[in-house]
Length: 201
Image 1: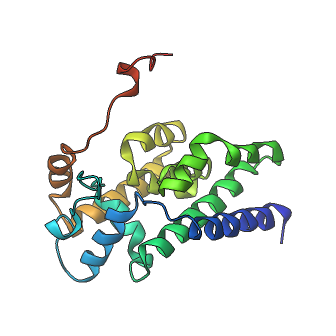
Image 2 (image 1 turned 90 degrees about the vertical axis):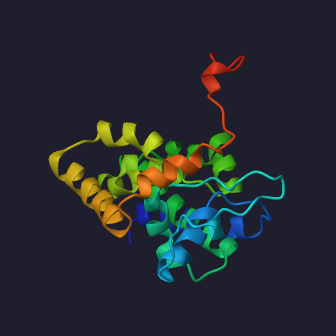
């Protein structure tokens, strides 16, 4: 095996093992729950996955493609599914970072945004991996609002077709999911960093 593959696999295993030892909340809670409902033939946007967090806020509701990505891990506990997803995302990200043989790019794994993404179980490592590895571009649909720049940067006719097929698959399973998602996402208590102080800096 090439050093690139060995280093990527090692990073994936380390991230997975480290996340298993972190008793932290996971932003993959809704996709994990929704994937379980999909396998049971139940509407993933049903109230079963909209339970309140301990602080009284709703779990963040994601686009349906997030649940499709979590389907292979649906039978596992949320903690294990989160650790495996972060490990696989980190493996793919390391592989993309080492594409040109520049090991200094792996310093990204020590950045505050990456540590934050690991701690809270977020999709951003996977989206960045998709930006670096065009074969993974359909996965930008898990977070279309941050994945769109990655798609437009590496766009070709075949890559656009692959993303469209994944999107159409999600619509075939649940044609009205974009409307359901948008209606439920209005409860999200987020903010726009640029409109805060000193967000413009």
